[in-house]
Image (cartoon, rainbow, N blue to C red; front, side):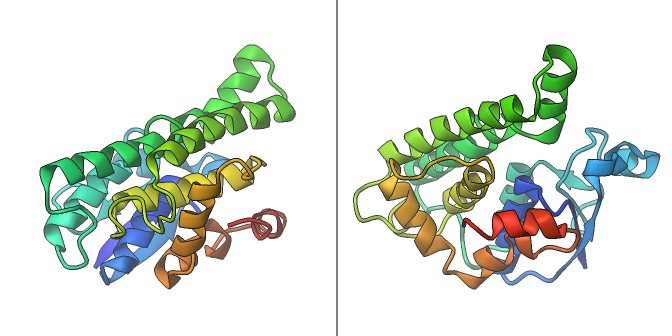
Amino acid sequence: MLVLHGYWLSLAAYRVRAALKLKGVAFEERMHDLANGHQNLPAFRALNPAGAVPALEGGTPEPLTQSLAILEWLEESYPNTPLLPPDAAGRARVRAMFLLAAADTHPLAVPRVQKRLAVQFGADATAGREWAAHWYREGLTAYEALLPEGATRCHNETLSLADLALASHLIGAVRFGVDMLAFVRVAAVGASLFKLPEIESSHPRHQAGAIATSRAGLQSGL
């Protein structure tokens, strides 16, 4: 049995959770309370020295970490319901779109970055929220330019890793109060993606550990 180590609010864990469901792979999820520093416990650091989620145990001799690495492994190990295109150019495009969220935006808004902004530069909660919203808008602008009019998927109307990244990006954008009016194409793809039960049920608001106030806030968006 595969074991996914996550945190209810983690967008990286969300991407892996959704992929496991889309591929029909049985897994158990164990949640870790990153808000209370559980990622710094010795047992967790033994699992992932970087002190981050997701981590995936059970399929390889050592735990897998980093959402893209885990997703690539899943793609190779469970090729049914492929999430990468068959052609090299398509795969490169999908990976590039994935990294818009997973590399260019998400790392700039995670709690440890928010904490560092507060400790080192005196950023209060409002400033931290505005910081995150800025980077999510930047990512949305790029996605909007890459999506053709009328699209319901990121690439060639076929579900791919890029769609998991965009879905996670939209969850983050909603969380930080980004106005979606300027991102018509992105919003249309997002609306289509969240109709898929595997993607919707993987949303942070449905996960164990989601506190009531946060869950209520997330309910207002995608």
